[in-house]
Amino acid sequence: MRRFALVLLLALPLFACGEQGSRAPFADSRAPPGLERRFLPPAGWAWGYVQVGEDAVQRYGVSAPHGAATGQVLILTDYGESAETWFETARDLNAKGVVVWILERQAQGGSERLTARRDRGHVESYAPDVTATKAMVRVVIRPDGRLPLTVLGQGQGGLVALRAVEEGLMVDTLVLSAPVFELSALPRPKGQLIEAAQWARRLRLSSRAWPGATDWRRDGPDDRALGLTGDATRGAVNHAWQTANPDLRMGAPSLGLYAAFYEVLDVTARDLSRVKTPVVLLAGEADAVTPPFAQESVCKALADCRQVRLAGGRHALHLERDSVRTLWLEAVLGAIRAAGRPAPATP
Image 1 (tube, rainbow, N blue to C red):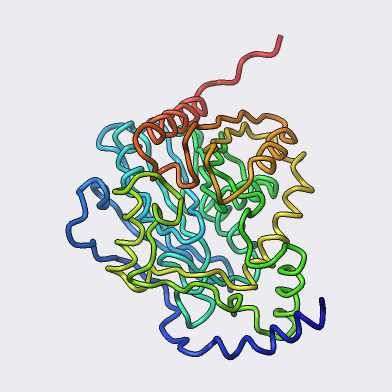
Image 2: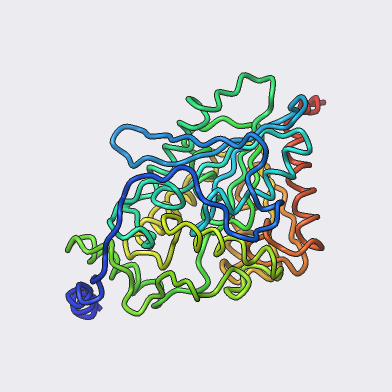
């Protein structure tokens, strides 16, 4: 296996041509032509940046309800998403009196990149994501107890959220939406992929993708075609924003990202007993990105976890057809509202 990994990685530079572009963070985006109003920024939407030490800059956004707020939520995005993907959900939550914060992942969306190729999903560690999440709460949101704070982690953002709570992040409720605690589809068997990724690090080639991995294409598949949602209109939203804004594009993950994913997965699984925060885990029964056994195993290991499985739901529950998304949104709102209620007295 080691000989195979070494041969593979020596060949990787052949696939590295064409790397260009800026690593700088990206603020205002251009709305795609013809996009429905519900997918545009909520009223009063504002952008900002958060940076911890020497880590890369990460972009966030925020919008508030028209009237008095009754709660607030911090959304951590999935792989390949930008905050723009969540504008419809932000509008819906604002209409229910919720302040919405969205923190984009390290080296994704409008955040600073770690490599000159902007559409390569590359990180060396998930630690900066976790650190930025904690800083976002402490320094930017600064909850004072008057408005309960819920953290909603979507997909891989759920893994980041859970790890942040393990490391001491204090929030009222944690919502894990289609959390990724294992990957169903890998370019190679898991053991081979991890070993190749570790060799890539040693040879300083971890920003390369697995040979033959699909890069972003204008004529490439949208989220519905990828099987992430069954809704044709919502499934086109993420690709539309990326088509109109080249800086938002995201293609295949790097070998370094795979290595980082399995490293943070291991430490998160080890420290589940540290989590005392109430957790609501929302999952689609038709999710092809991550297997249900991993979600069920994590939920059972947590001190306070309630799991809701949505019939017909795929991975991107916030982009699903109404029959699924309505139930998902009600569950999210229920968790946010429950965060503001006092805990029942212990007999």
